[in-house]
Image (tube, rainbow, N blue to C red; front, side, top):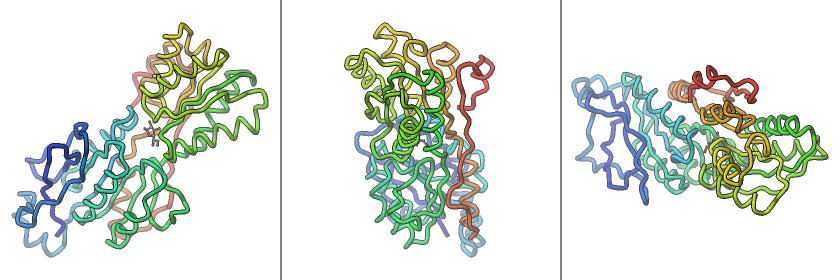
Length: 360
Ligand code: GZL
């Protein structure tokens, strides 16, 4: 019987349980930022608790194991509005389905070692499925081998791992095509510049598949199709608005002839827009701004004439995650890559109605 292990909630614990099927369970809000977020330690056996409403069913439940789908989700953190949208979608979905789902949620504060600790804790808890967005592409072999040895299938969410680590180390990936997103951004950029101009690039988290692949898609398209567009510089803004602004400020000090900026996510684009305005220039006009994600702030900026394009990368993945996890618990096979369907949005398409209709 998979029991919902009462987790010690240390002061810096970044883990919560969601939808344990008992009325006293609260939906775990995203954990407060913590200095150091050690993985939750399973409570000592004598403190193991079962959701009260399951004690009445103990005899039946004991014989058939936990009827509910128990999913461990090791979230990267809260680095962007996009990430928060994904977290909310996952937690709200679980909270709406307490009769069939139990969610153990961990916030790794953008640290790979915390994701690894959380995954090991999920193995201890003997969850049915583990789902997580790998903050970077490498360094997962050991912990994913432990998942495999424990017989727990793994769903990669919104980012991937380095293929050389072995595709058999995870069961499936639910994610957008990040190379495609980079290519789409380059196509729009070429159109915005009329085929000629100088571009700077704000990259995502170093080593993250979304950053590596968006860069690959953008840079390769420009190199192969746009001989008169030059990429002056490219640096990481770590997918955050603050660093996006900081790096754009340094670009503006270093180069006097920037025509456009490609940002690997909209949060960095919003930071770049601030920097461009503070430099006395008009974002969207003097310097074209192209982002990725499709967050509402990007649509609001396009409506204001301060941004030119966002390539969508939906974070609304909870339904696919839990449906896929249920299939894996039932022993069904699924595709190796469950790809999201995303769109490309340019400023000319954006009205207040479009902004108001955005889901995230
Ligand atoms: C993309 C996801 C990226 C987003 C960023 O799938 O991994 O991480 O583009 C987020 O906003 O930080």
